[in-house]
Image (cartoon, rainbow, N blue to C red):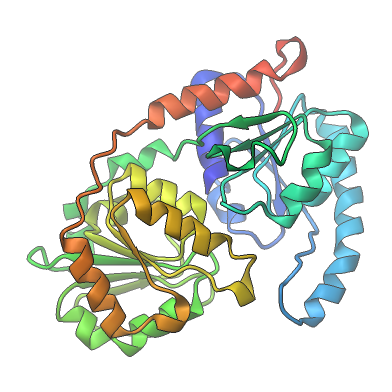
Amino acid sequence: MPNLAIIESIKKTQPTTKISYIGSYYGLETKLLANSDVDFYKVHTGKFRRYFSLDNFIDLFKVPVGFFQSLTLIWRIKPDLVFSKGGFVSLPVVFAAACIGVPIVIHESDSIPGLTTRITAKVAKQVWADTDIFAKKFRDFKVVKLPIRQQLFTGDKQVFLTKYSLSSSKPTLLVMGGSLGAGVINDFVRQNLPALLSRFNVVHIAGRGKAVPMVKDGYIQFEYLDQELKDAYAAADLILSRSGASALSEFSSLKKKAILVPLDYNQSRGEQILNATKYAETSAAEVILEKDLSYESFESALLNLENNSKLDLKDTNQVRQSVVSELLFSMIPDSKNKV
């Protein structure tokens, strides 16, 4: 979660800052922030799906409820700045902050701006993105690369392999489908598990509610990983994943080879396909479209990755941390310290 890295950056550079986090009732952040010193609040949110669903109609009524909840929270918290990473949870919070006159910063990581970003950019003081691709789309635009959590650099490969009885003589495949999982990737792993296990240890993060009972030597399954994610990354020789921008940033900083299966157009606005394509141009990654995912295409991607040497980028995470924190605090009136 990129917001956790932002929080880490602020705590490192401005340790007296009071941070509050507004999220959804069912988001993964509920668990990830449970033991932190960040005040966590929940609001109702509505999500627009790019396919027919009755939930689209139900969620229309959740948005105004979430707005008034957010308005109450913003009035009570009295933040000096609101930072939004986009996504449907941000919509009521950003507009509530705008109504009260709180400065707003939005960051968009994807190659195509999301609906929430396009709407909330109208009331934001600044819009940030990883590249200058949106420079002509938004006023007050800045290129700002977000950091990733520093703890992800501290993983221990052998600790992870030993704990889960995985072979040290085999490479390890880490499978990730995002916090909600990815049905296409999960099905691929389960249907081809014997073939995969003949070559790899398989560490499978299936997504919340997506794990199924399976016991195989060399195979371990999780719904999600938090504290142990750093060790899973350290153990991974190859990653099979979606291509959300935040995940790609982690793969790049940790210098991991990846096979990417982006969300198809019928489930998204096409941002993951563009993310993956642009990422593979400069990083050790191969892209397989959902419709083309098979064991044969997976093997072909493996062969291509064997000769891929695009892993020599310098890590700039500490620089990213200081830059993000400095920029955020430069926008807070009178050097106050509540975000």
